[in-house]
Image (cartoon, rainbow, N blue to C red; front, top):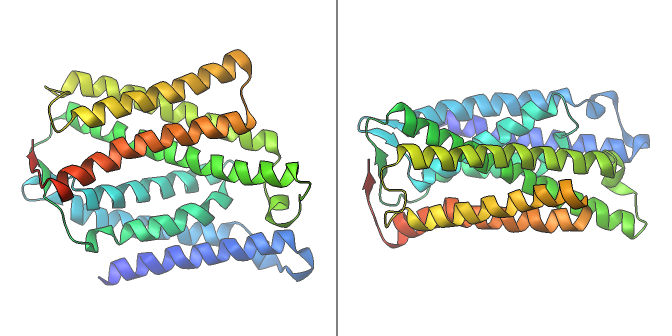
Length: 275
C-alpha cells in the first residue's frame, strides 16, 4: 500500500509541476528558473512510472499465470501511456500531454483497488500469445496518446481560429508541428494494431469465439478508420478538424473494443476466461 501511495503522490506532484511550468511559460513575469525547467516534473513522473511498474508486476503475475482482468488492464494501459509520453517527451515537445495523461495514470493506478470482476487468467501463455497481448496493449496505448494529442490540437485550432492565441496556447509548438506529431502517433499505433490483429489470427485458435467476436470486429473497424485517415492524409492532405474527427472516432471504437468488451464480459455477464 505504501508503494501505491508513493506512486500516486509522485504522479500528482509531477502534474502540479507541469502546471507551474505551463503558467511560467505563459506568464514570464511570474516565472522562476525552476518552474520553467521541464526536467523536474519529468523526473518525478518517471519515478512514479517505475513504482507503478513494480505494482503491476505484483498484480499481473499470479500463481495460476497472467491475470488480465479489467482492473489490471486499466492499470497496465495507464502505465504504458504515461511511459510513452515521458519517453517521447525526451525528444519531442510532448510534455504538456502529461497534464492530461499523468492524472489518468494516477487514477489507473488505483484500478486494482476497485471491486474485481470475474478473473481472466491466461495460464502458461506461449510466446505467440504474449506477443499478441503486448502488441494489443501497445497499439491501444499509442492510439490513446494520439487521441489526447488530437484533443490538444482541437483546443489549439479553436483558439487560433478565434484569434485568441494567448494563455497556454503560447506554450504549445506550432500547429504544423502538433499535426506532424499526431500523424506520427497514428502511424505508429496503426502499425502496432495491424501487427496485433495479424498475431491474433496466427496465435489465437478461434478469434471469432463468442467472447472474442465483438472485440475482433470492433478492432478491425477501428483499424479501418485509422488506415482510412492515413490514406486520406497521403492522398488528399487531410489535416486539421478532419484529422481530429477521424482520430477521435477511431479511438472511441477501439476503446469500446478494448475496454467495453471486457467490462461486459467480466462485470455484467460474469464470464471467466482461462486460456
